[in-house]
View 1 (cartoon, rainbow, N blue to C red):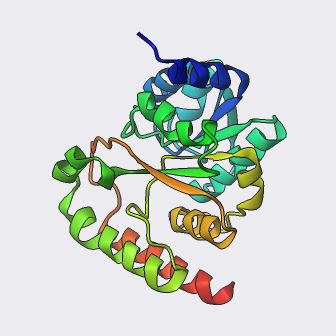
View 2 (cartoon, rainbow, N blue to C red):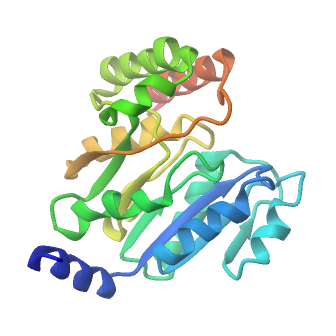
Length: 237
């Protein structure tokens, strides 16, 4: 039986427009299943094809959603910026960022947006470290090298001390999206968004999410590039 609180949340959710922004690069193998898993849970799905070399764009267009395309590969941060700007223009109330690689669970979108709907947060970050099951499956190079290094840089140079410095699963209000100005076109945008949220004194909350690793993702050199981008951005800012 549903409680009154659950019914109130559902009623509020019906009045709130939730858009999901999905950056995609060469994700033909995953993009259809990701779109179909997300579509029933939000009001609009926006896929940004970042100049893929495969059929990602064509497959996404067949799903009756919004598809935006970069003519050159600009990076995930730039793709998120493009999609977020479109969502703001279309008057979304809540904007969700979601990866196209099928590592996140669409069913957890409701958990990520809930603190915003309840008026408890301006921006919510999904954290794989608040879900103990994830700790078993996280690739060792991520768990013991890349993520600890990212957390250290975040803490020392950006004054950010959250549990997951590189999560691509987040939600924010339209007002928050207008405030946060992403400058990092590639993977360093995750830490940049965290930093700007703290810099602008936004109400921040972390919630546990599930991550299913299908591959190792970033290699060590990718991790060093992220750290270098963050380091340089701190002193250029």
